[in-house]
Image 1 (cartoon, rainbow, N blue to C red):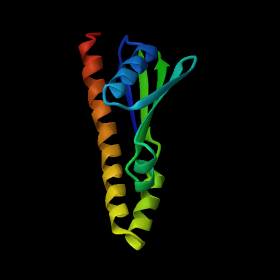
Image 2: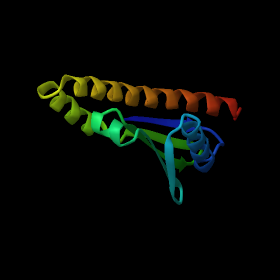
Image 3: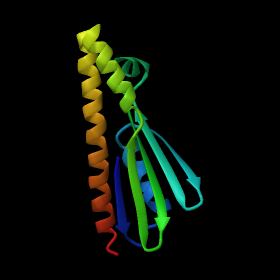
Length: 127
């Protein structure tokens, strides 16, 4: 989980739309929920087979409008699934451990890539 505060004139609503588009360009299924000044963007990738193998991954991004900026918090939605698939894989079927590890890696990499995108997006706004 990562928490960042961006000092910008960009609103949480605008930033959430940019995040949804960023995920969709990467073929993720997305949804965005709004509760006034807080937005929740959820993105997931991987079908049933990927989920069983522990290779599906998801990311949740919470954006909260603050005075003078936006607070952004990222969190992974399927970390426990991967740990469970990895444990079962080591005990019962080695390839499941490998695929769970791959899914775990991609999920962590995804959060880092998103935060990198946000840095450039906010910097490009030229506040």
